[in-house]
Image (cartoon, rainbow, N blue to C red; front, side):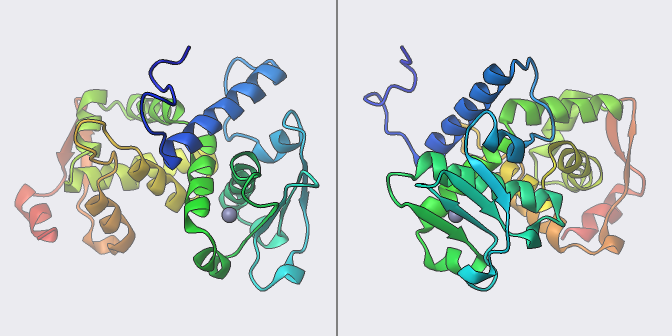
Length: 254
Ligand SMILES: [Zn+2]
Protein backbone atom coordinates (compact mmCIF):
# COMPACT_ATOMS: atom_id res chain seq x y z
CA UNK A 1 0.00 0.00 0.00
CA UNK A 2 1.39 3.37 -1.04
CA UNK A 3 0.66 5.47 2.03
CA UNK A 4 2.89 8.32 1.04
CA UNK A 5 1.07 9.07 -2.21
CA UNK A 6 -2.35 7.58 -1.51
CA UNK A 7 -4.96 9.45 -3.54
CA UNK A 8 -7.01 10.29 -0.43
CA UNK A 9 -4.10 11.63 1.56
CA UNK A 10 -3.01 14.46 -0.68
CA UNK A 11 -4.02 15.97 -3.99
CA UNK A 12 -2.07 14.64 -6.95
CA UNK A 13 -0.67 17.42 -9.12
CA UNK A 14 -0.45 17.08 -12.89
CA UNK A 15 3.35 17.22 -12.68
CA UNK A 16 3.54 14.53 -9.99
CA UNK A 17 1.21 12.31 -12.02
CA UNK A 18 3.41 12.74 -15.09
CA UNK A 19 6.57 11.94 -13.09
CA UNK A 20 5.01 8.81 -11.60
CA UNK A 21 3.67 7.62 -14.95
CA UNK A 22 7.14 8.05 -16.47
CA UNK A 23 8.77 6.05 -13.66
CA UNK A 24 6.17 3.28 -13.96
CA UNK A 25 6.79 3.18 -17.72
CA UNK A 26 10.55 2.90 -17.19
CA UNK A 27 10.02 0.15 -14.61
CA UNK A 28 7.78 -1.76 -16.95
CA UNK A 29 10.27 -1.55 -19.82
CA UNK A 30 13.17 -2.58 -17.59
CA UNK A 31 11.24 -5.56 -16.20
CA UNK A 32 9.92 -6.78 -19.53
CA UNK A 33 13.32 -6.43 -21.18
CA UNK A 34 15.13 -7.98 -18.19
CA UNK A 35 17.46 -4.99 -17.78
CA UNK A 36 19.30 -4.23 -14.54
CA UNK A 37 20.32 -0.72 -15.49
CA UNK A 38 18.66 1.95 -17.64
CA UNK A 39 20.43 2.27 -21.00
CA UNK A 40 21.34 5.89 -21.78
CA UNK A 41 20.23 7.65 -23.84
CA UNK A 42 16.91 5.91 -23.25
CA UNK A 43 15.81 4.33 -26.58
CA UNK A 44 12.27 5.67 -26.32
CA UNK A 45 11.40 5.14 -29.99
CA UNK A 46 12.28 1.44 -29.67
CA UNK A 47 10.49 1.00 -26.36
CA UNK A 48 7.29 2.59 -27.72
CA UNK A 49 7.04 -0.47 -30.01
CA UNK A 50 8.53 -3.06 -27.69
CA UNK A 51 7.73 -3.63 -24.91
CA UNK A 52 5.03 -0.93 -24.78
CA UNK A 53 3.19 -2.32 -27.80
CA UNK A 54 2.39 0.80 -29.83
CA UNK A 55 3.21 1.41 -33.46
CA UNK A 56 5.90 4.03 -34.04
CA UNK A 57 6.76 5.66 -37.34
CA UNK A 58 8.54 8.57 -38.99
CA UNK A 59 6.17 10.02 -41.59
CA UNK A 60 5.61 13.29 -43.38
CA UNK A 61 2.96 15.10 -41.33
CA UNK A 62 2.68 18.19 -43.54
CA UNK A 63 -0.90 17.16 -44.48
CA UNK A 64 -1.89 17.97 -40.88
CA UNK A 65 -0.69 21.57 -41.23
CA UNK A 66 2.48 23.59 -41.36
CA UNK A 67 5.11 22.74 -38.79
CA UNK A 68 3.43 19.66 -37.27
CA UNK A 69 6.19 17.71 -35.52
CA UNK A 70 4.41 14.70 -34.09
CA UNK A 71 1.03 13.06 -33.71
CA UNK A 72 -0.65 10.46 -31.52
CA UNK A 73 -3.58 8.33 -32.69
CA UNK A 74 -5.05 6.69 -29.63
CA UNK A 75 -7.50 4.34 -31.36
CA UNK A 76 -4.84 3.05 -33.76
CA UNK A 77 -2.28 2.87 -30.89
CA UNK A 78 0.07 4.76 -33.20
CA UNK A 79 2.69 7.48 -32.63
CA UNK A 80 4.20 9.34 -35.57
CA UNK A 81 7.06 11.83 -35.74
CA UNK A 82 7.75 14.10 -38.70
CA UNK A 83 11.08 13.64 -40.57
CA UNK A 84 11.90 17.30 -39.88
CA UNK A 85 12.78 16.47 -36.25
CA UNK A 86 14.98 13.46 -37.03
CA UNK A 87 18.00 15.60 -37.83
CA UNK A 88 18.18 16.69 -34.19
CA UNK A 89 18.50 13.62 -32.00
CA UNK A 90 17.36 15.38 -28.81
CA UNK A 91 14.31 16.92 -30.42
CA UNK A 92 13.37 13.62 -32.05
CA UNK A 93 13.60 11.74 -28.77
CA UNK A 94 11.70 14.42 -26.84
CA UNK A 95 8.89 14.57 -29.44
CA UNK A 96 8.50 10.77 -29.36
CA UNK A 97 8.41 10.79 -25.54
CA UNK A 98 5.92 13.69 -25.50
CA UNK A 99 3.57 11.74 -27.78
CA UNK A 100 3.93 8.68 -25.57
CA UNK A 101 2.90 10.92 -22.66
CA UNK A 102 -0.34 11.81 -24.47
CA UNK A 103 -0.98 8.13 -25.19
CA UNK A 104 -0.49 7.04 -21.58
CA UNK A 105 -1.93 10.06 -19.73
CA UNK A 106 -4.58 11.59 -21.97
CA UNK A 107 -6.29 8.76 -23.88
CA UNK A 108 -9.50 9.41 -21.92
CA UNK A 109 -9.47 13.10 -22.85
CA UNK A 110 -8.93 13.01 -26.60
CA UNK A 111 -8.40 10.38 -29.28
CA UNK A 112 -5.89 12.33 -31.35
CA UNK A 113 -3.06 14.74 -30.62
CA UNK A 114 -0.76 16.65 -32.89
CA UNK A 115 2.11 18.98 -32.17
CA UNK A 116 3.43 22.14 -33.62
CA UNK A 117 4.61 25.37 -32.07
CA UNK A 118 1.53 27.28 -33.22
CA UNK A 119 -0.98 24.54 -32.34
CA UNK A 120 0.53 24.11 -28.95
CA UNK A 121 -0.29 27.72 -28.12
CA UNK A 122 -3.88 27.22 -29.20
CA UNK A 123 -4.38 23.78 -27.63
CA UNK A 124 -4.90 22.66 -24.08
CA UNK A 125 -1.78 23.98 -22.40
CA UNK A 126 -2.30 21.88 -19.30
CA UNK A 127 -2.18 18.65 -21.33
CA UNK A 128 0.83 19.89 -23.30
CA UNK A 129 2.73 20.82 -20.14
CA UNK A 130 1.94 17.44 -18.62
CA UNK A 131 3.12 15.60 -21.75
CA UNK A 132 6.32 17.68 -21.68
CA UNK A 133 6.84 16.81 -18.03
CA UNK A 134 6.31 13.12 -18.80
CA UNK A 135 8.87 13.30 -21.61
CA UNK A 136 11.43 15.03 -19.38
CA UNK A 137 10.88 12.54 -16.55
CA UNK A 138 11.11 9.56 -18.89
CA UNK A 139 14.27 10.72 -20.67
CA UNK A 140 15.94 12.25 -17.58
CA UNK A 141 14.89 10.33 -14.44
CA UNK A 142 15.91 12.35 -11.38
CA UNK A 143 17.97 9.58 -9.78
CA UNK A 144 19.97 9.03 -12.97
CA UNK A 145 20.44 12.75 -13.52
CA UNK A 146 21.96 13.07 -10.04
CA UNK A 147 24.11 9.97 -10.61
CA UNK A 148 25.47 11.46 -13.82
CA UNK A 149 26.13 14.80 -12.11
CA UNK A 150 28.16 12.94 -9.49
CA UNK A 151 30.03 11.21 -12.32
CA UNK A 152 30.91 14.60 -13.83
CA UNK A 153 32.24 15.77 -10.45
CA UNK A 154 34.34 12.64 -10.04
CA UNK A 155 35.71 12.85 -13.57
CA UNK A 156 36.72 16.49 -13.02
CA UNK A 157 38.09 15.77 -9.52
CA UNK A 158 35.60 18.21 -8.07
CA UNK A 159 34.34 17.70 -4.53
CA UNK A 160 30.68 16.62 -4.83
CA UNK A 161 29.44 18.73 -1.90
CA UNK A 162 31.34 21.76 -3.17
CA UNK A 163 29.92 21.26 -6.67
CA UNK A 164 26.31 20.89 -5.55
CA UNK A 165 26.47 23.94 -3.29
CA UNK A 166 27.71 25.96 -6.29
CA UNK A 167 25.23 24.49 -8.78
CA UNK A 168 22.20 25.47 -6.71
CA UNK A 169 23.39 29.03 -6.05
CA UNK A 170 23.08 32.16 -8.15
CA UNK A 171 26.81 32.76 -8.67
CA UNK A 172 29.33 33.04 -11.53
CA UNK A 173 30.80 29.72 -10.36
CA UNK A 174 27.41 28.08 -10.81
CA UNK A 175 27.06 29.41 -14.34
CA UNK A 176 30.55 28.26 -15.22
CA UNK A 177 29.96 24.73 -13.89
CA UNK A 178 26.60 24.37 -15.64
CA UNK A 179 27.81 25.79 -18.93
CA UNK A 180 31.25 24.25 -19.15
CA UNK A 181 30.80 20.78 -17.71
CA UNK A 182 27.34 19.82 -16.51
CA UNK A 183 25.08 20.72 -19.42
CA UNK A 184 27.42 19.38 -22.15
CA UNK A 185 27.89 16.09 -20.28
CA UNK A 186 24.22 15.65 -19.45
CA UNK A 187 22.87 16.50 -22.90
CA UNK A 188 25.30 13.96 -24.39
CA UNK A 189 24.54 11.28 -21.82
CA UNK A 190 20.72 11.62 -21.95
CA UNK A 191 20.46 12.50 -25.65
CA UNK A 192 18.42 15.65 -25.09
CA UNK A 193 18.76 19.28 -26.17
CA UNK A 194 20.37 21.83 -23.89
CA UNK A 195 17.01 23.56 -23.51
CA UNK A 196 15.38 20.29 -22.40
CA UNK A 197 18.14 19.64 -19.86
CA UNK A 198 17.87 23.19 -18.50
CA UNK A 199 14.09 22.88 -18.20
CA UNK A 200 14.50 19.59 -16.33
CA UNK A 201 16.78 21.16 -13.75
CA UNK A 202 14.33 24.00 -13.31
CA UNK A 203 11.51 21.45 -12.82
CA UNK A 204 13.40 19.83 -9.96
CA UNK A 205 12.44 21.77 -6.84
CA UNK A 206 13.23 21.30 -3.21
CA UNK A 207 10.32 20.48 -0.92
CA UNK A 208 11.54 22.88 1.74
CA UNK A 209 11.69 26.23 -0.04
CA UNK A 210 10.57 25.29 -3.59
CA UNK A 211 13.82 26.66 -5.02
CA UNK A 212 14.91 25.10 -8.30
CA UNK A 213 18.04 22.99 -8.70
CA UNK A 214 19.19 25.24 -11.55
CA UNK A 215 18.47 28.81 -10.38
CA UNK A 216 16.37 30.74 -12.92
CA UNK A 217 18.81 33.66 -12.93
CA UNK A 218 21.70 31.34 -13.81
CA UNK A 219 19.64 29.75 -16.60
CA UNK A 220 18.87 33.17 -18.06
CA UNK A 221 22.57 34.14 -18.00
CA UNK A 222 23.55 30.88 -19.72
CA UNK A 223 21.10 31.66 -22.52
CA UNK A 224 21.94 35.35 -22.83
CA UNK A 225 25.64 35.79 -22.15
CA UNK A 226 28.15 36.26 -24.90
CA UNK A 227 31.33 34.20 -24.78
CA UNK A 228 33.54 37.17 -23.99
CA UNK A 229 31.59 37.89 -20.81
CA UNK A 230 32.28 34.57 -19.14
CA UNK A 231 34.53 34.55 -16.12
CA UNK A 232 36.94 31.62 -16.04
CA UNK A 233 37.45 29.18 -13.21
CA UNK A 234 39.42 26.04 -12.57
CA UNK A 235 39.36 23.24 -10.02
CA UNK A 236 42.14 23.08 -7.46
CA UNK A 237 42.08 20.45 -4.71
CA UNK A 238 38.41 19.73 -5.41
CA UNK A 239 37.33 23.37 -5.18
CA UNK A 240 36.27 25.87 -7.82
CA UNK A 241 38.75 28.75 -7.98
CA UNK A 242 38.65 31.91 -10.09
CA UNK A 243 41.36 32.13 -12.74
CA UNK A 244 41.11 35.93 -12.81
CA UNK A 245 40.88 38.34 -9.88
CA UNK A 246 37.60 37.82 -7.98
CA UNK A 247 36.54 41.49 -8.27
CA UNK A 248 36.70 41.35 -12.08
CA UNK A 249 34.35 38.38 -12.28
CA UNK A 250 31.95 40.06 -9.84
CA UNK A 251 31.94 43.19 -11.96
CA UNK A 252 30.78 41.20 -14.97
CA UNK A 253 27.60 40.20 -13.20
CA UNK A 254 26.52 43.53 -11.78
ZN1 LIG B 1 1.32 17.50 -27.23
